[in-house]
Length: 593
Image (tube, rainbow, N blue to C red; front, side, top):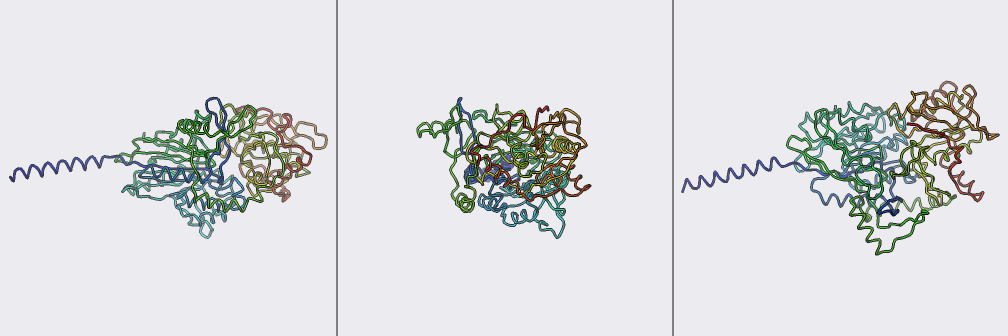
């Protein structure tokens, strides 16, 4: 009997040991739900899709739908993190009027675990960012930005946080794009920025020294940059990315061109897998990344997708671009087809978020609804020539933005004394669709607190200003928002040439005669620019240097958004609509990569 008991006990012990061993070996699984670069785009926006040879328009995104989708994804997974990779602020009338307070209130309701600072968080200076952070009930993390004691931003964020999930500790490091933010936003002198790779490695090592072997980098450094970072830094397992507004995954079923796979997998210098994911822009998509870790904290597998989100209002567009509501029976069939493509999630608004948003909507309704004129045709906008518009195949613009030169023309008109206008691509936040132009549309298009500044430059300095902008984004890995558009100037660009020699055949339009003549390198011209690049931001260093040498330019104190609004109104008074510029007035004559 004793022998029987012993054998039973021994058998149970072995079975328990095997069971315990199997449990110990079971991978730790984590689901990361994420967005990035929503830029105060809190409402749904029209987006064109293609399916089975037909063109449709959906109402994409909106934070109430983002909230609904995040809630649904959380319910499907056991271990979840909800992350935002930066640039919550700046881009629509919601930001112009409420300075990030509408954004942070909705983000609080959604329930993010962590948020890293993006470059546009600093657009209105330290005070606006401090108010945003003070209202946030989620962690703010950024490892490579430090603030002097005494500043209103001092001690407002940490380099990383540690989350305990299902008994496992996960480290999350925040990362800001350093050069772009210091050069292209408005942080005060109390704010310092440090190298992205060195700081990431420093805090990855610090977390590993604490025994934490599962580390996520919540990064606002951009898709290409983060791939390079992942190959150089040791100890990072996952990068949730932002800044580059990158669509990842296969969206060919609905006619959208993506940049790479979701997730993108690269090898670190240790030969280990690093999973990189991003979820496009403007609250149009929600990323869902599933990661399995082995007992050493290394990535076993990662998979998932970026869910493009839409409401159930879908329109069919004919050959002329006219849209019509789809009949209910056909709508259900189409909705199923789009959902089955795996590319689109059709979701309803989250009621709580929609209710909070409605309070802000009412406040801006009267102002934003004011019609000031009409746009006669779609004016498409991309930052750098040759790229696709809205990510749709076949919509390449070889000479770049159709809208930025029109914006520049409006500033030229407002100045009265300017010989030319130079406008950075990033200062124009989107394209314009044909139709009514409202005040809200103008301030969404030009959301920053800029005025128009007139600066005297020699012809040589005008050319160098254009060269500076190209060097900033191409050679210095800065923002492609620095790409130079203009009115009253036209020029060829060849990016294969050495820096400072990429702009050639520059011409200027004589204001009185309207004739185009070669730019005289020794002659002085008055050039009107927005106050942002007048400060040397976005790499426009010559503008700053000239003012240091010869005195500040003339600040007209003309609000740049209102200047465009008046331009639209003046055209409307002539019973005309705003159109793209004639080819001979477009600033870029040719562009070579």
